[in-house]
Image 1 (cartoon, rainbow, N blue to C red):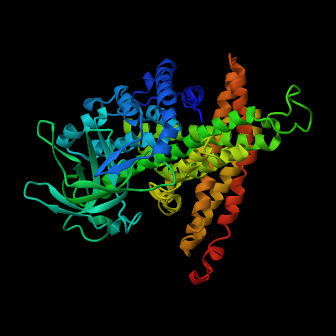
Image 2 (cartoon, rainbow, N blue to C red):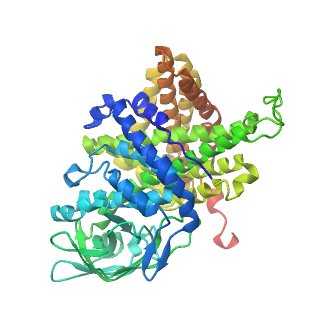
Image 3 (tube, one colour):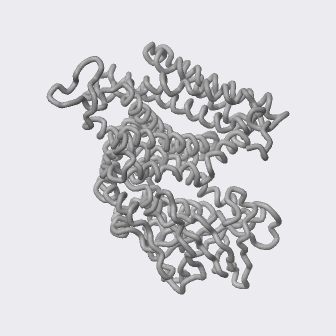
Length: 592
């Protein structure tokens, strides 16, 4: 059975050595000293390691059950959920006015990684609620906030988002769910939604569904869509629960992974709903949840890779097989542990260098979200909007790849259920698909985000990388091992952007056929930047004297591997992009 140890030390390194959170001018960050973050992370680690992780296999094997319209979650999930509520974890970064703790989003992200690595399917219940809370907080009326937020933040009620229908996914302009206005100001919601995570379950007293539907007068396409609050149980004026609303679970999806989470078909049969935000502006309100969800899914991708790596590493240290070619390493045993073999080390370092780089990238992104929200920083808001499809698409692609590499480390044992690596592979696979497939993320990046603000945001990214390199190239070790490879990769990214500018206008296929490679190219540059900053912090710690030189030296060596063995992939992606659309679009559809 797999095990999990929360990477608290590594998180502290990123928070304080790399991001220097306590010295930031972001409101609330002055409270994030090392002792405070250590205490928070230690408590989250206990819950993750001792409560959530042991239930991961249970949830996978038992799954959820639907009987007579009632969904029951796997054994132990309800008790674990209650412990999460008692600890205040659901409202960690929520508004104190409604019962939240008001911590920065960055802290919530760090804690969230632990919960996802320990038990991804379980964490989705409160993760979906967090998105619904954010949407109501941002777009709800004062009355709606007072009515729903306190119980949702406390965890007594949960939340969902309902977008997809049987006939449409990404193209939401095709939805058929209708909202009919009533004399009392409410609406009757009628339609069917599919793939609704945590749509029905037994963990909370009520579920607050946020549902996209079309109200009269909105016209065709997404411009006609509005967003509605549709509670499972009606909420009386005094806050007590009333009658069951006309919303029901019509079935559970039988999935490849995340069996412990209830993925539901939700039927709305004239259910009572309430408009949230502006009429026919539902997409704007929904994207409050979608953007947060996409960042969260990127985190899920690397978090599954991280726990898979931990277990692959443990196996590699203990599994005896063959002898090291340059000399016996385990003379008292029949063979050496497989970690001595170069190809196994290559495999493990690919896992390690990705997950640690991805962690830093995600934390940096979470810090930008705090800058945007807590400082009203428009530049930070634009930058995280640019990077969101990269975080979601690149980190989930590579996160899934990392779980496969971890499974490969175990050889035949990795293919069996006994060792648990195959569950990480199955659970990670969904991250590349939901909240907008990774192909859609790449199209969003190239088709929308590059041109955002007249191209000023992507130019700001290039300038940021260029300035960082210039300011630090006096550090010879950093320059040779990190800054020079980063400069080359950044030039590849700029060349790809220039290709799109020169060739995409006259033939959009030239840009769109290269969008996926561009997303990965961009992701590698971001991780290269993160590894450069982690190496810089590590060199500084070693120069200043540290009680743990091994930790910082290990960081540097892991980063050197990424810069030398992973980052050169940017040249391959650029080469593919510059071939244009001919090789992709020439073959007739009938000839595939």
